[in-house]
Length: 241
Image (cartoon, rainbow, N blue to C red; front, top):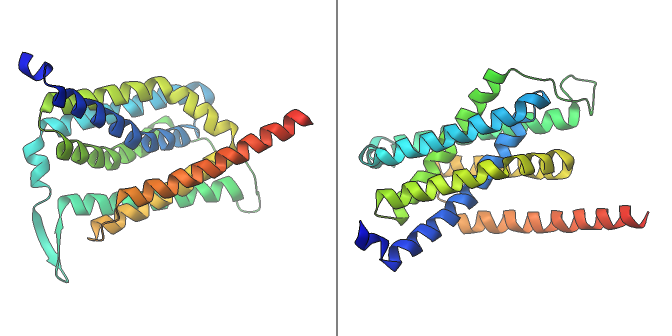
């Protein structure tokens, strides 16, 4: 253990993986904030904490079951010359869930909960239903996160530490992220558009069409940059007024 601690490659791997886990976790955090935003104000922070805690638990359990996780990539059946594994089915199913959730949230943001009530505030939902939706999101994002960790590091304690640090940082940042998203409706709409994008990528990945993540992050980064300029321009206009 001491030799590992003195190995610079171990620390470089830990730092790189931690940063990557934080980047992968930002999507999870934003979507948890959006789902939790449907609850009454006094329950939203609790829902975010429970959601991120469940995300941490799922990631650590998956890491502790690496042999089982590797087995999820084994072929269980083939269709049209393409081999499907449990990982493919989970990713495709999770992608369809994200597409459904993103479309529904966008509809309710624009049209309101009821037909004929555009702009109406979304109806409040139960705490249990929100936690159920968060669990579904956690399963999808945890699988992607852990598979990335397994591919980048060889030591279980390095992977576990990176995941733990990333989730703790997200726990501290969850309130600020949620408040920012709720204060800026255009940012919330952009996040929902990202939800649709990621859902489509997961479905494609599950069907055997791999899309390099660099393209996805580049598109998302460009959109975030444009939205940041819009926010700055709006703030300047309000200040001048």
